[in-house]
Length: 457
Image (tube, rainbow, N blue to C red; front, top):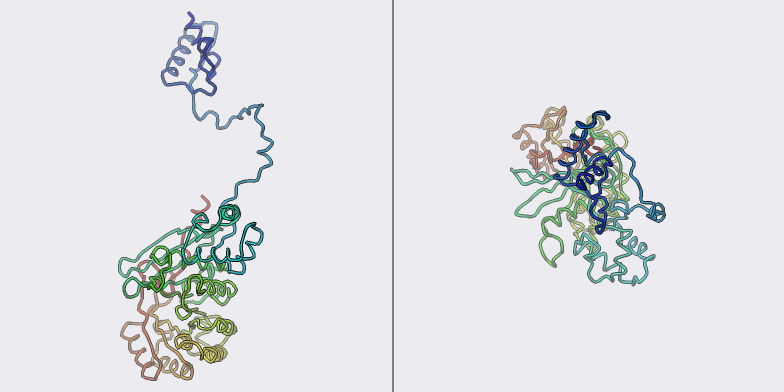
């Protein structure tokens, strides 16, 4: 009978406590075993069948999800005052990124941290860009007290790789890199050359405002400029992956060149692009030679003088036509800076580069080959004549198709013939055959195509 009373009490009260003899404690928040569940259900059924004065009741079961839509009882003895006034935890995205700060900015940030010496900023700088550390804790010769304070408010963040595609045909690697705000994603491409070395093609904006008709990026509206840190991170990711970091003195770099030829117009985000270049070329940091960095512009003529101030950075001009009528159509910025104005700015740039290396003095002119649009042999002769007085090199680029594009590439033989005409008239010319076509990573194909809706699910 004692046992019967025990089961009766458990079943009728519905408590989750195991009642034992008086010397045992009540086990709070105890969950019944399958054995006990079965006996409780059996007893409830027995009681329903044998109690004629009570209406039949559904057997009581213990559902682990039953608490979800019910109020939770709070222990009255629990002091929650300190919880309500406490600040939410700080996430990495909410912290300031050390990547992208100039050395002077880093020194300024460290002024508020006790124990910092005059050389501490230089130590941190070398850890970031020579050692390639990704955690403040990895800065071994920085005092723990300083690292603890840094960790509270700062982070080392290269962004997140949302997608990573490698071409099985030529090894071109296209990364989709995301940053703090969910929609801020850009494509960045590593283009292998001879052996393991290659060129990293970097984006400067999320989208583009110029709407060049042959360029896939031009169909994506401009969302915002990238920060200096977001630009530098597009180098740091492959540099880490391919073993360039930590830096080894006199070692050959696998990411040996950087070109600002990705998404966006670099000269319309000059403040951040300039700071990124200064970080990439700093001799106490990454130390990339200036001659190994190329900035490509669609023709922002006034910006060329600003680029010249950096001294030694290579320049590329997206020309694509030799007369204003055609260039107005396919490169709309020509309406603001027509060919004559652009060529004068190029000539001034070349003069300012006379004391720099030969590669920096010579300007690369990019020319996409569009069948029956800009590819006549008359255009080839006009192009050579236009560039006659400027130290120049022509890159002929077969048009790389993308969904919805209205153009077709000129035939291969025609491109070769076009090239020979220009070279015979004294202008060095290279045909830049497509790389990364099968991963939509070729010139003119970049666009953030990741489904934005997936980011909010």
